[in-house]
Length: 165
Image (cartoon, rainbow, N blue to C red; front, side):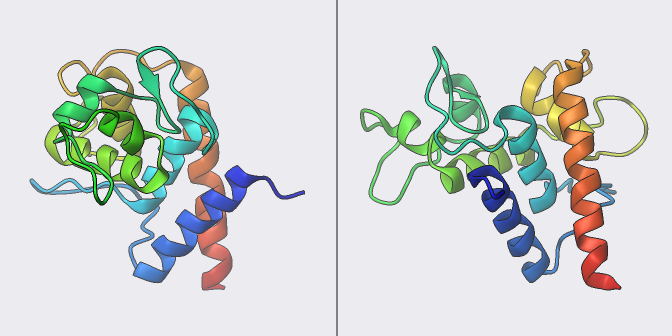
């Protein structure tokens, strides 16, 4: 049985592997933390099961569950032909998978940090920043999100390893 979320997740994994940056160690050193495509896909999975049809629910929208202030902090990315000031620009972006993904990438580029103080910035830290925000990511992440992230990262690692054998 093949669901749309697994198709989307598979697509993200395929893109990551094809681009050669499917690093599932998710550890970033130095001053340039990066959000890998695998981590981005797993954050999507943790937030909504990568449900491309996820509507706005109050002030939270799309498959990454993005708020308007988050979008603003990410630099107000928009879809081609749209402007940040256009009516609906926020909703148009965060409900479209690639624009929403770009929003998360921009946000992480601005706020990525070692939230759990373990000496590395990894996908768990990116999830903490995504859920708790760039100014308070040291709080506790609800278990349903960390469990979904861990499961996804494990599956992505197994998927990647199947290509290396």
